Amino acid sequence: MSDGREGLAVRDVVVRYDAGKDGVTAVDGVSLDVARGETLALLGPSGCGKSSLLRAVAGLEPVAAGCVTWDGSDLDGVPVHRRGFGLMFQDGQLFPHRTVAGNVEYGLRVARTPREARRERVAELLGVVGLEGYGGRQVATLSGGERQRVALARALAPRPRLLLLDEPLSALDRGLRERLATDLRLALRETGTTAVFVTHDHDEAFEVADRVAVMSRGKVLQVAAPPELWRAPASRTVAEFLGYQAFWPASTLDPGELSEPGGPRDSRASDRSVAVGPAGLRVVPDDGASVPAATWRATVVGSVFRPRGVEVTVDVDGPVGPERLVAVTSGAAPEAGTAVRVALDRAGCAVVGDATPAPRPSAPTMP
Ligand code: ADP
Ligand code: MG
Image (cartoon, rainbow, N blue to C red; front, side, top):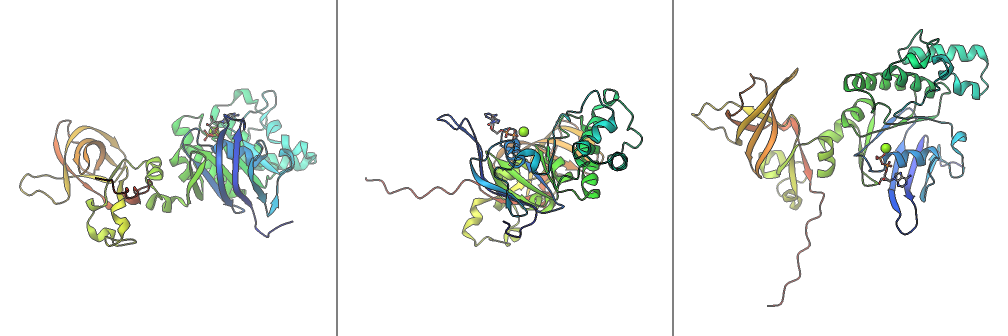
């Protein structure tokens, strides 16, 4: 039985724990599609239900309502090991007493793949994850990053039709995490693997995934490709989670900026705000003579050098009152205590609707 759809489809899925009177609804009616060959990231803060959703897809957690299908076939009642899905977790959980090759070939042995084919596949996968020649090493001698590379090779070896990754890089330190995120993306591409990648780190989600599903409190708030998600967050909640640092009235922008869509004449315009991104505020020269329009007074708190420019922490006397924000400058780092002015940099900002619905007009009160 198939509806012709290819890949993974999640429909109105609910996951509950202790479904008695004090039950927790961890996943609250989620629908998603992952096309073959695509990588989808599930991005959201800790506790929002990412792992619960992933485990439901894997068959490790019962689905209280809704359904999970692959190529249109319902997976209800199909046990974990018959789904053809691969799993990888934060701690790769390698077999400590096997060599690297012994770990990578594990799934192939289970599938009774002949020895020569196993040997070839292991060599190929070690190449994909950047561990050529590591086959004979004991896993106890590997670094944390190397272990996760082995875990990835092991998960990919049996050619899973879907790879489910739950925060596979979260235990690694930052530099290593960034490098591994790039390598993970390349490995998924090179092997044509369809994947769902769980993370709480937006940089990582953007780096690895073709599309990102932003989750909050058991629900999916928005699904979009990284540039679109960044350019047009669906709500303030999404924007906050992506790292937008402040929300100013839409009127802060030049009215011309608001003409599309739902411009100034749109009744919703007043509900919208400018989300100021990490690079959405610029320090502008203040020569004292002319005060540039649409700028705000600020006092420098401190500056940090970054390869792409100096980040200046400022106390801004902004349109919604005093706020401590980060502005960027291409010039020298101003000293703490310096009075400056800051302006919005449109390229680093987005216009978002207010997630909270406008209050209903209250009923007239009796005199
Ligand atoms: P995330 O992976 O996004 O951090 P989880 O899916 O682990 O979120 O958890 C979602 C919610 O479900 C949380 O409130 C968590 O406390 C709860 N939860 C997760 N696993 C269990 C469990 N086995 N029993 C009861 N509650 C759980
Ligand atoms: Mg989790």
